[in-house]
Image (cartoon, rainbow, N blue to C red; front, side, top):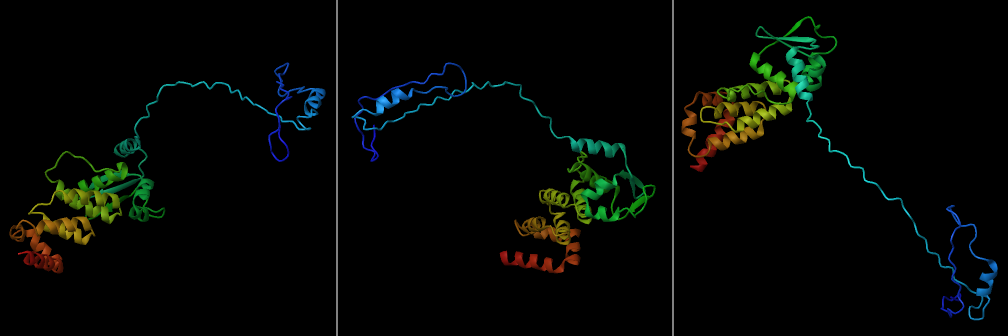
Length: 259
């Protein structure tokens, strides 16, 4: 028993009563008889106070785990379907003529992928029955460009003999049509294929199309391991001197400082 000051009084004469419901109803219909409660609290030892101690037991229904088989979700195949649609010409509504070779495509897909195509293939442009002539791009390069637009990947033709030259032309086409991801992918390939015969040409390409990583890789290649003498003898270096005289001077000055 407790007083108002929270001091413990004697525990003699306390009443223990367990409430047991006669049925499974919610709650209790009858807790304790008033006479028993008054008798317990009116004793001299309790001084008119009593404590109610409640013990609650929450019974939950056991949770049943449902076992199921693990589903294997197939890999995304949107690119495969788009590539097949392009190759088969399903629903094509625009035709390009590249050096006499025709390529069918889909206006809305081209417009969604390239800001340049979006501007060129507006609703008031040439009709679907007319072929749009493409200049300054060779058919294999334009085909590789369309392949990227439909699949978001580089074309694998299995021929690595002229891959460096193809990547250079494809980089130019990617820059022309605003395909930044393709431009960077070509730049990355070219950074791994720098040689004495091609480094000067690649450097001109990097300078003209703002390829910072390729430019840095070319300059490092030219100014290391005494390669400059062999590079100067190539036709590409003559092209570099004619196209980028200031850049050529910077490279020569850098090499002379090292020597």
